[in-house]
Image 1 (tube, rainbow, N blue to C red):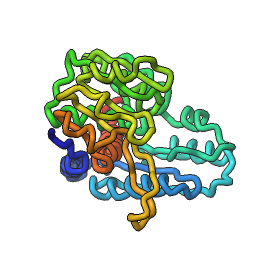
Image 2: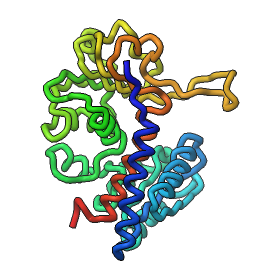
Image 3: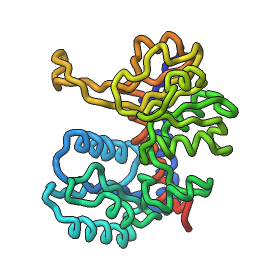
Image 4: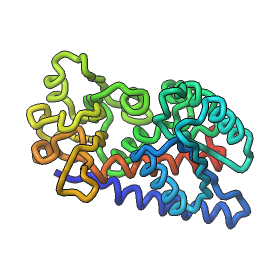
Length: 292
């Protein structure tokens, strides 16, 4: 069993990005600029945005953080999105999700200029990804594909089971694993209503678990030598930790790991690659790689 170290891989990629940024700046080009909009004080969102700001520093990007209290109106937030769309200095920006219940998330996502949608959530980017056109790919699926490639894991012709069908991970992950240019695999998507779920998993060469249920994948669901990618990050109570909780994946790691050829840990697996992929998208936005 080999551990897939997302933290170390992300650090290497950020170094590569930083070197490219310095070359761009030395040649008279513009330093990429990522802006983040944060609404309220959700603990998880605060942590994610803080890590994104730190990643921008590591990559040599300019970063901006725009904060609103959770009583911000939808109109105010849409006006902020419009300003960022029109700001020529901002190459890409994100509106951190989730948003308060009184705000229509989809309306906010669709208001973002897809040329600056480095989260890859805009329907134009989702559609372009689905048919294999250049676009900004959702950061978590892009991070997973990058890990599989960097570790030399063969995906072409393999049977891949994606657990979960969310718009952010499950659906785009299945699309990427299916496409010839990326995974080139045979893909099955399983979810809470799937029958014979254990049997599907037992036949899989690669399992990507993004179902949001701690310890869902157990040893009896995994065939010998399978590759396991754990996307789950659920906070579970842990009195032994200073924070009072620990991050738990969708995979029962200690039980499953002995049966795998490769496995991602939680934390330190997919998580760091998600932020790293956002940096890759921001660099592409700064270089106007996808949309001239």
